[in-house]
Length: 114
Length: 113
View 1 (spheres, each protein chain N blue to C red):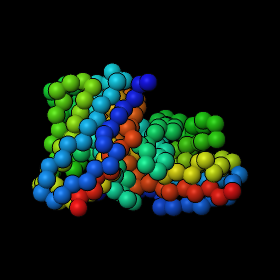
View 2 (cartoon, each protein chain N blue to C red):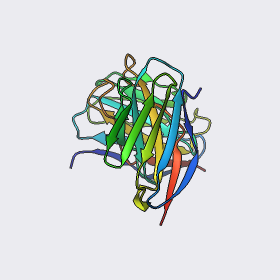
View 3 (cartoon, helix red, strand yellow):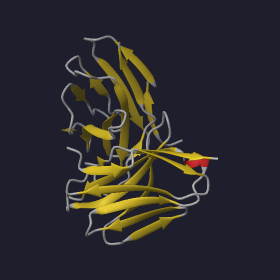
């Protein structure tokens, strides 16, 4: 089965802790993305990566970090600097960055800060 | 700031009725307008998309109407079914930027039996 997997599905974190969300795709896509979804807010872009070892900040990158060491993997670290991290996090991938390259989304990780 | 404004925030339609969701934008550089459907606890999935060189695109029961001069586009779901109950997001993309999908805030649709 081709697709995007995100783990864990639910994640609880204490304030002041860093936490890493996993995103893996076996679609052979070059581009990968991280979005944050808050109730009634739509999706907001955190980071994106066009190719391995390269990534760019999105609209709300503060308090987050990413790496792209492998084509299939694009983990997101939510650092203690992120002031309001409780949200639903969605990873996506696409063949490239052309506008017609459909972004396919994973099932998401719901992060709750206690 | 929100570059794509979506309304209504929520919508209740009877089975068999027409669901209509509207979106408006300001950036005339946007040239690709997808709609995503999201079920609870799942990631969004592409439903249908349109470019501004056409005024309408239809796929099954789903139709996008596009008004370039008004900078508005809408999703029509004909013969709405309870299985259509989901959150719908419109989005817009600027071709040169490639990556930056600008999403509306979403519409929660409930289709009652």
